[in-house]
Image (cartoon, rainbow, N blue to C red; front, side, top):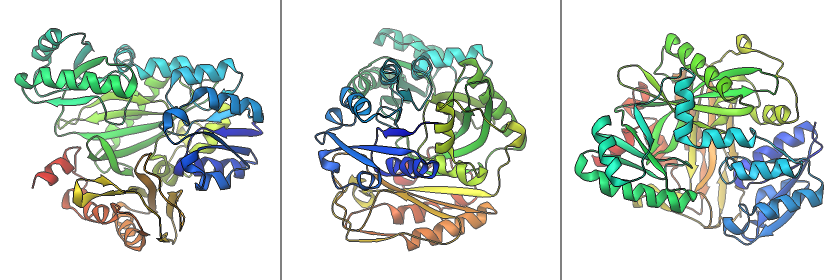
Length: 446
């Protein structure tokens, strides 16, 4: 087992990893930008080192600074959290070359699954259902030809990256050229890779993801699904497990397909297979996230497993001590993301000092955050400031528990989306579980 881990991230996920390490008896090293000098993860870690100014390119994405810091402080491993460098194959490769364990899959697996075009081809070969579409589109002329073959509506999607960037929906042929050029430019700016492909747009659809955990000895388990269909502009707002929309038969088929996918690429560590469930009940592979997911706590709540600890154990060479038959989901969990943004003014980002903070309590209520009273939220980073998670015996009980917990949550000093979340979990389509990925778009048009 590792004795010291450097955490190459910030915010609530850095705090989450530090807590797991402390419970495992592992020394932690936090890195921080000048803007994060007063951040919670800095004070919680055993060691804290400033690695640059506020912009992420000069601090949290500075591979040289991160690796030199890890070597200098004697860290045996780096945990990248989510976002930032967590799916950067080059960074994982540099860690390998520096003989530092990257807590994630090998660099070649990240490369293979990060290229969404290659990932789809790999899944087809493994017998995993894939959304109809083609390969990389090099020009507008070829885009028109591919669009005619796929049919409209369709999606233009970036080969690299994630977070909803580099994606454009095209309703009709006349809109294709503009969407193709916009997606290409955004992908190049965001990921340094302007390559895009196209696929059939399924509507209405559900976004279902399956959590995988794989060791270095061929052990593969699927820890059930998460329903992630409550989204705004491809960004998730609410997640729950299990999904209220799939049958036991569909769940078994998704688990089987996910295990096939993991074995096809010799996957190791935590990973998530994302599927779209179409209106006809058929599901299709969308992509694989080769990292810890933001929404991992809902899986922890229904399985009783600490996924961050298992991530670390697998990276340290430990073998899974349970198999697929041992995985049982208990009850129902829901997560609401609390974002520093103003829903009444087009979700404008908000920053400022937290002058009053009250975190809800009670059995099976969890709030993952890096906030504290008096903390000044810097304007340079992601707007998510916390995740509220509840667990109960049934979905109905979990919804009531979430409403109570949201009403008890107080974050004053910044605008936030707490009241929106109360409204969303009270909507009839959420209550009956029929909501789809276009729900918020349709709601905003009313």
